[in-house]
Amino acid sequence: MTFRLEVTMNKFRMWNFRLIFILTALCGLWTMDLSAKEIPAKASTLVNDYAGVLSSEEKSALEQKLVTYFDSTSTQIAVVIENSLDGDDLFDYCQRLASAWGIGEKGKNNGLLIYVAVQDRKARIHTGYGMEATVTDAMSTRIRTEQMNPNFKSGNFYEGLNEATTTIMQLASGEYVNDRPRGKGEKKFSWLTFIIFAIVIIIFLSKGGRGGGGRRGGLAGPVFWGTMGSGGFSGGGSSGGGGFGGFGGGGFGGGGSGGSW
Image 1 (cartoon, rainbow, N blue to C red):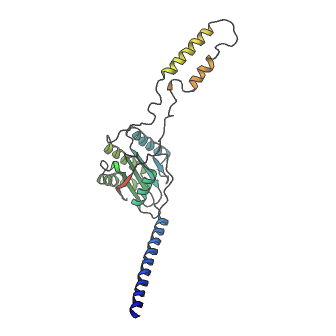
Image 2 (cartoon, rainbow, N blue to C red):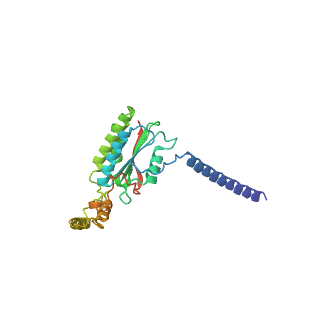
């Protein structure tokens, strides 16, 4: 009887231990989820200054620089500036942010995130899988400590980001080529439009040379203006100068370098 009681008590203790372990683990996961900083909605620009440390001119210049580089290489360098990590871990947050936004092209994984938390005085260069060979962890550390940190300490965020992105571009230059450049082929010369335009001119001139007054030209006017209004010689309109077309689904494995300044 005593033996059976001891066995029952041992089983009871074991189940209690397991239950406590499971509850502790669940509480830990729940707490971790609550402490995780919310990822901002996927941006439509490469430079995203949520802390307001860049002037409009600085933001525009940096955006144009990164868009031009993206157009020629397909490599996406995204800059995200926030006030604080709100207690979240720098590495974990950058990994979640870069993956959620999908910086870089799918398959190439040629994306790179430069993240800055102003009030926390922390920054990180987070590289996609396809960028790790050219922008190595060691080079990321040098860029961060030698170019970003000194400028950030002085409050010169634009200078730090401008220098860092220039070095990153030089390191990754030639690694990728954009096989689908934005706007390519959108302003082709259309022979069909030219022929229609020539026919319209001939009809217009021939009718204009006849007497008779009244309405001249028949369909010449509407066809002419309709043709010009639908794109003229452009063959389908233009991109309007274009902006960043959106992130392409790049993947991240955790490469890069981060720390305080």
